[in-house]
Length: 249
Image 1 (cartoon, rainbow, N blue to C red):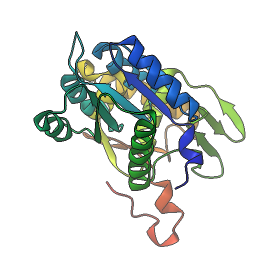
Image 2 (cartoon, rainbow, N blue to C red):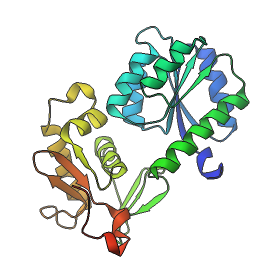
Image 3 (cartoon, rainbow, N blue to C red):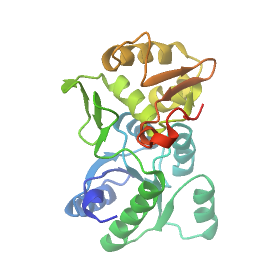
Image 4 (tube, one colour):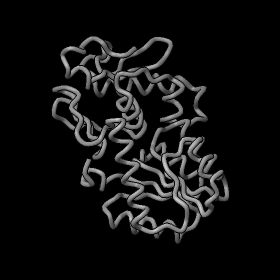
């Protein structure tokens, strides 16, 4: 994978030191990345859920919730790559971050070159492993998705989705072919505190079907797995004739 498709990725920088955030932002934007900011753990969790960044740079030492706790919560709602930032160089901290699900670890102070190199390396690793949804996705002749542009096209017409509908579709498509449970969707789309509110999922699944499906009562994109959750059609495997009709359930 070349740098070209990686350069426009969206990076969320989380640090309570404004000077550090400004330093990171200037260097990442200089290399073509899009950058958003959070200055505490609560903001970080909200922005991961609402803005769907491609990678998070997460400081360990923050005043409200430390980076380790933020990482735990992020991992309940998202598999977004996370690089931990810390002024400490102790091996125990590095190990703890990696055990909690961090993808890499950078010790302050670091050079702009090291920062962008680590960011690119993690993005390459995670995107090549997952084959994830960037660029134009042609599900079939009627439905096309572009998560980079936040656009959904049905029968050649641009369809307007509300932010919650968009986030729900994003997480279903990211797991195309696999069942995503009610609890997982609630945590990823609405937040971990909504895990006891399954009616939100049912309601917004219906909204999405009305906008995307040719026949919402007989859906072919967003499939129900009764008593478990929902599955977006495995459009990648359907392009291989040998695998038609063999979607994971």
